[in-house]
Length: 330
Image 1: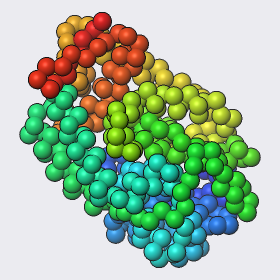
Image 2 (image 1 turned 30 degrees about the vertical axis):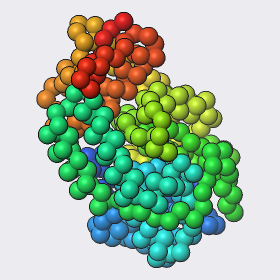
Image 3 (image 1 turned 90 degrees about the vertical axis):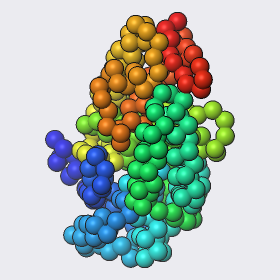
């Protein structure tokens, strides 16, 4: 069935390029849209191996980087933005990104440093030891090399349409997995290029992130994600092309499974809190046991996302003591 879906995508002039990444998620799906302008959606991480593989897969389609005329960026994560600047520099391509995303891409190092600072504060506040926070900061700084800044030459707005020779793509902001998640909708073909907004084989982790403008309260990532999924569920789609893994031919089924997963997980976390007040880190340990240092922020994001649900439902509240938050059942 997956191969039939890829055949349908290719018939519509959309080719998947599977670019290697250093991350646990594996290869990232980059999409070449055969149209005018010749368009690349996302780029892969900033590495020689990834660039070589991108060139090889383009060559198999009788294409070269120098021919690319437009690069669309789906969101701020390293495996999607890392090669944008190199590709744009070699091709002269226009680089398009959502208005909320453009400042992150153009000030990549500063943005990543601010994200690390935000993450460190969140981790300390929710019970992770300072030495673990310091270790994670070092890991994050090492990962930054897989990303790179780029000049955004076309700023997109939610609801805007990108008109090509053979198709029109509607730009839709779908925050949750990141604050800047953007999907591209071809209504005529009932197709959605969804990046990491919806993935068939795993639930996209709604990572905690600082507000895009740097101010105000942190985004409630999972609540935002569930709202975004509800919007996507209402769309009439035959095919969703994800940022990782195989295409999706029944998006409502996948989304309903995500809703069920998060409902079950929220209820499980509530039962743990009802036993005794706990920090988010203690909840993560109760859920998944001893956690590798590199997974500490991911699991913390998962737990806090679900405590946000429970707090919105009036089932839990925060108790803060000496700068550390515990969750208590109401």
